Length: 258
Image 1 (cartoon, rainbow, N blue to C red):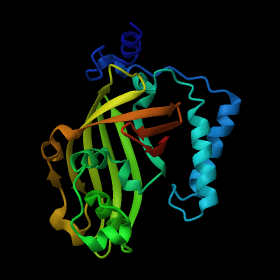
Image 2: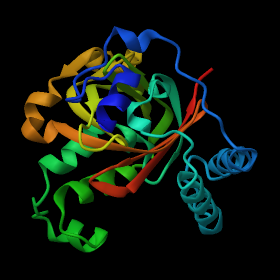
Image 3: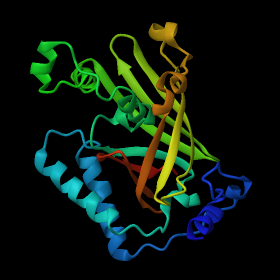
């Protein structure tokens, strides 16, 4: 069938199982129309102007979101989740929320804690909601001594490694690293099924050396919620746009690292 053909082209089995050795072959070039290239460049410029989507300038954010949505409608890669173009090292250039949330760990954590109410009336009133996790994340986003550095994803042979540099004064910077397996969703060639396996703290500074190399078996903690779905809405040899398939307002744009 059509799904089997797409999967075979990417070295992915018809049932969505992991990528095979055939994925080592070079990915075929994708033809991108000049108009789409111009739109892609606009997204790159606006993503930078919006500080990865974190600016307080509402007009810039609106222009950036509109350009991203326009580009998604012009995706040049059929069955993007089945394409070998996915493989490689990617750097986050835009996030619709805090850049740390590009990690599939947070996608799974939301599933795991869905429906758990915040028992604290003060935080419910302050953040305007009663969801415990959302209020907790909103609080951490307000911490003035936290900085978020480079965020990357590496996809290769059925393994996705998400890494975000996070700095907290005075302990310094660490690389929050989540490792997932991934496979093609057999029902939708635009979707990757990710399974969160572990989360680690790597490369901690001397001041934070007590947590260096800390490894958390997040897959065991998350249980069935460890499986999440990544919707690939745009893909070419330079840019990749993805959304949490279960919460599509969550949008992340990655640029391929050369």
